Amino acid sequence: MSVREKMASRPGTRTTDPAYVGLLSQVMTNTLDEDYRAVAERRGRADQPRSSETRVGLIVVLILFGVMVGVSALQTEQDRPRARAERAALIEQINQRQARYDDLRDVISGLSRQVTGLQSTVAAEVDSNGALTNRLDMLAVEAGTSAATGPGITVTVDDAPEASATVGGTILDTDLRQLVNGLWRAGAEAIAIDGHRLSTLTSIRSASQAITVNYRSLSPPYVVTVIGDPGSLPARLLETAGGRTWQGLQANFGITFDIAMSDKLNLPADPRDRLLYARPERQR
Image (cartoon, rainbow, N blue to C red; front, top):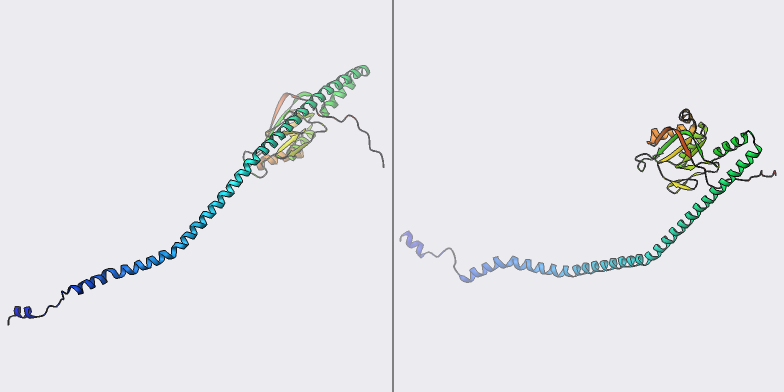
């Protein structure tokens, strides 16, 4: 028997049974897909309640936030007319007080002129050589109750350029007082700050963020006008404690401290109330 005949009569090595082939294909194709599908369905059913709870919680939070914003906006809107009315009332009070203050200043100025005229009349009657008149004039200038004219210096001081970021770069009321005291010791005859004449009753104080002179709020730069000998005032000022303080402020903190000489300066009188009568306290 030939080889070909032997192979033809020999059973085949592979089966071609359709049932076997279909079963194998189904096992290979569907087994993993069905398992994964079942697991995915179980997970989806497990996650569905949790997702719903999260969504409900988020909605509740958003609703509460909206209610809070609405209540706040409503409260602000209700309070706005009252706040506006209170602000308008305060502004009106300030304007009225300022107008009253200006009227009183005018009255005081008029009375001061009358007193000056009466003093001149009396002095002319009892002071033949004018010595008393000259003495009264000199005292009035020193006290700040009369205007003053003459040569002097102008001292300009200002905060440091970066005062907001530098500790010590802002001028304080104590700094201005140091400067004024130094000028008096250096021989100043009359002083004014930003046009406000300093008298024996003048106060230099701090009010909130501003410095007040004669109860008037000022802002930097501050211009200090001084009547006196312009040839000696600057040098003598730097020899005083106040002058040395300002040299330190300029060197250490960058505060502006400039001195300029002038041939003629005009300083107004202090129109505020003045001390007209006093008596010594009784001995205890």
